[in-house]
Image (cartoon, rainbow, N blue to C red; front, side):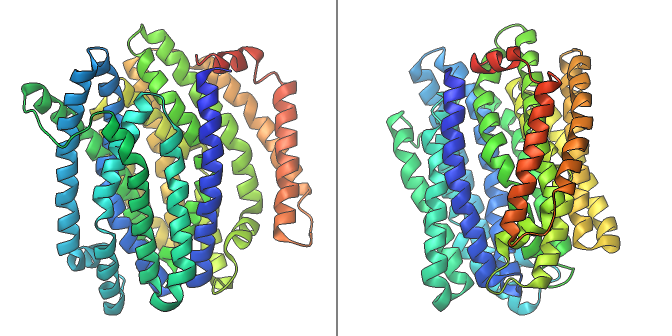
Length: 496
């Protein structure tokens, strides 16, 4: 078995463990807090550090991998010195963001949650201050993850989220009764700190130190990171737009859209994110050779992601309400919370393949250092999402906000694909023909799942039956239609 498949298997197994724990975490949050006003406050406060981190962390992981791999060709000392300088600047930037978030938490909450009451804004500012240090800790982890991935070491970065989820679960169980949502925030902070403890030693062993060596090359690299940071910020601002608009809707909408978003990302995180993670260093390696190998891998990756995502999407659309009910309906999570979350979940699921394709194509552009192209594409997606969210929320409520996100995701992927096609002139006819063959297969699989959706004793029973029928029909028809060939499997095994 190739290193790529072995790495994919390790990441997938750890992702399953992490996501099962993450599912337990979200289910407990829903059971303890439901879609109550305090749940809205927590999810709004939690998004603030995530915005800051994502802008820095995504840029680090996307940019450091190609730079570090290139520097390693010149020698370990060169790679280490450049990493130390870049990493130190990013860490001090994160410290500045953390301090600004801590000091101006009240103003930030007023800006991003215009529909909140005074009591909610006060609690939100307090939670934001608790979570502000996570920006610095997550930045350290982003640097470590970038270095480890560039060396094709995927174990620790895949393991650490599972550890964080354990701490959050413990905090919910033991702290929520006495401290309420504040105990949950403390658990998140503790979990991130433990992630840092796990991932920092390998970074230190690699020679990372908080030192800077100013040079024209460092300045050039910092300028290069600006569009990467902007692109990551635009992507994260889509979530902010969703939450700002849902904060003006009925109480509980912010929590509901968060639950729905987390739920729809589970198959992406379990199967497709490991695939994207393993592909990225290989994509970077292919850029040093003539473009044909790179484009071949991009097309293979896109088609693999699409094939994997489709049956999950069918099950989500068929069994969406049962999925939400099984996942969250316990404790204080009642029928109103169920209906709010299900409506958002359904419209998110419409674009499931595009959630994963966006991240894959972004990595492809980063691999060839087309950072500005990625930035402008993300900006277009943000503008589309903001405009559609405002319009559709007035017509469809929370479902309209989710639908706007899905439409903007499809538009973003389309722009990313044609941007890449403009850089490398290539023919996509063969891939499009194969995609077209999958469409009727998907319709047949959907119909099979629909007719098998008869009343059963429990929600999970109905989900399992529908899933088995959909995946079985889908897999058999793919085999009969020769959609996935032995050549595809052999090339994936060999990492091509």
